[in-house]
Image (cartoon, rainbow, N blue to C red):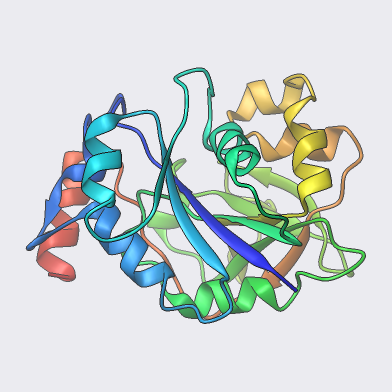
Length: 236
C-alpha cells in the first residue's frame, strides 16, 4: 500500500496571521509539523501544500512543497489540488494539519492501521474524561456507533449528560482514498456543516462513512496568540 502525507498551510489565518512561519523555539511551526510527520516510516512521501511563496521557499530548505492556487477555501480542497499535481498514484492520502507542530508519528501510524478496504475516510479520536476545557468550542467532539463509525461531530459537548463517562475528542487528521477525496470535493456545503462550521458533517449528511480509530496520543493546535504562548511554555 502506498500512502502520501500532505500538509496544507497558508499565511492568511484570521486569528494568527502568518502562523506557519512563526517560530517555536528555533524552528518554524510548519518545520516542526513536517519533521514530526516524516518520522512515520509508513509514509511513502510527504509534501506541504501552500499558495504562498514564503512558505514554499521556506519548506524547500528542509523538505518538499507544492504551490497551489488561492482558490481552495479549506485544507481538504488544498490537499486535493496538491494531490492532482503529483504524478504518482497512492492508495491513501493523509491530510496532516499544518497548525499542530507537536503531532506524533504514532498518531499517523494509528490512522494507517484502519486505512484498508472498505474504509474510504478515516480519522482519530482520543478518549477524554470530562473537564471544563473540553467544553471549548475549538475542541471537536465525536459520537460514534458500535462499528467505530462517526455518527456526529460537534463543537458542543456531546453526548449530553455524559460527565461520568468518557468523551471522544477529535484528533483532526484524516486519511482518504483518492476516489472518495475526488467525490467529497464536488459535494456542496450542507446545513449541518454550515451550522457547526465542520466540513466533515457535509460528508455524513451525504451518506458517507467515516471510520474512527481511538489513539492514546493527544495533539494540540495553535490558533491564537494565547495558544502560542502556552506552546512555548509547555513544549519548548
